[in-house]
Amino acid sequence: MPKSKRSQVVSLTKVAKKTREHKTALLTEIQENSEKWKFCWVFEVGVMRNTHLKTVRSLWRGSARIFFGRAAVMAKALGTTPEEEHRLGLHKLSQHVKGQVGLLFTDSEPQEVIEWFDDFRKPDFARAGNIASRTVVLPAGPVMRMHSEPPEPFPHNEDPQLRKLGLTTVMNRGVPTLETPQQICEQGKALTSEQAQLLKLIGEKMVVFRVALRARWDSETGMITEVAGGPPAAEEDSDGEISE
Image 1 (cartoon, one colour):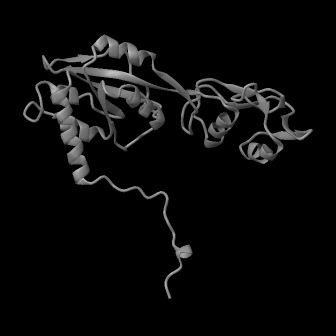
Image 2 (image 1 turned 90 degrees about the vertical axis):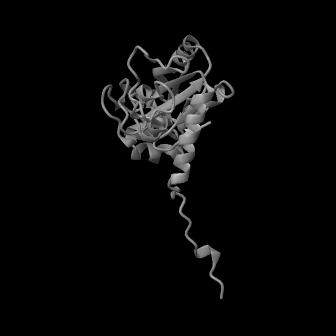
């Protein structure tokens, strides 16, 4: 008798490991792009969100090539010593490839690149472990969804979820209501998973996705130029590779 398909367990969390062939292909791609483009930038991401990074890639498609993945693999592709560097000066650029960073290959002039990334910022919801950028206190009265336009109260069927996340609500004419003001988070302190979920439910965006340029390599001279200004804090880890 054939085995029932209903009894099969399918894991939705299993992720295939990167193979040696995949890493070799990535090394080759980075080296090929170092021969194609005039400049290579090392950039760092603050508050990593794949959705926003894909937006950056989309907006630069055709005028740049972006790689974001394991720093050790990208550094190896550039070369970490004068003897190993793929092109003149790249081993000095690889010294900046540490932590949550990526590579941007482009022919665009440096000032244009700097100004574009200075302007690109995307507010997003904080996650557990992120530091609260401000204190959020809900006033007494109906608990409101601030992301709706205009803001509207939560429906009655979401009251159990609000209570589970720590709000001391009461039902008033079918609306989850606070009898006194209640603080959700305090500025400067790490968010718990419950606080992060509450902030998302009410529509309070507390973090900003942005890209900070760290250093630039010029293919014509082999010179490395460090970019002034501190990089954004990398608040999350990501070990997946993303390339255009």
